[in-house]
Image (cartoon, rainbow, N blue to C red; front, top):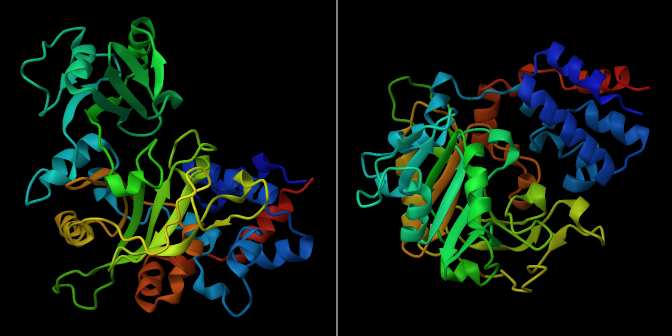
Length: 390
């Protein structure tokens, strides 16, 4: 049996980031539950840097394993970006960074930031006709009808994202009715929260799943340059859509039970099949051809406004060109798109099932290798695993 505390310490001693080492151990634990493997499979996979379940998930063999991004090496690479990652590590900074050069419309309106001590900081889009007092948030909600409230960075105590609505005299939090007393009670818990415009998805995406917004995950890499003076080139290495489901409580995150569907970055066309994490599949079959709740199939579906979205994403990459690695979270709206956030080291596991092995592309492989992918000894993963057995 694995002593995960021992493994966690060994990973930290090896140099893995403190936060990422905890995430790594949690993912290994989830993998061992979802994909039980014999000792021979564990040795083969871990010695190459992979969680054992990747053998089944990816269909790993000796011939193709070098085409997939190995878990251990990927976690050891953190952080890929240098100090300029502060531009996107919190939502307030990102709003300011993208507030020029034609990127302004990519971010929702920002109304309020709640300081850690509870003080209100009114943002650039706060309506002038809403009084700046203790009832500001409630009156803003009545005026706008729907708001998004989310941690500026991290999880802020675990309350997470909140969709706030006011209709027909009733307040709703994440689609559930609450009282005004409930609303007032969670206000003191909102330190480090930002309150913004709520972004609604395009109606064609709502037909697949209407109860929460579909978010796109797009990973962009800045390709290595031989000449320091040449213009940079960006490339998409991962692109998939995420839909909520009843199992996920409406959340679109795959880790909560949502569904992912890969699409072609150049055309916006969906693949025929999608997937979900195996632990949410009673049948054990994680590949799906339709939404499990609405039964809508996505075969042949193309993302709306895709040419506009793709070209604007390329413009945004140029705007924050000192970064090298971007995990963009995007909602396509009735008239364009908005960013939810930008991550600097996004997950890349199930994405390689939806979008194909990342390292099979020569340019993508050159990026990861230039950022140290191969400098870590994959075999150390299995050695540490053996040391953590009881």
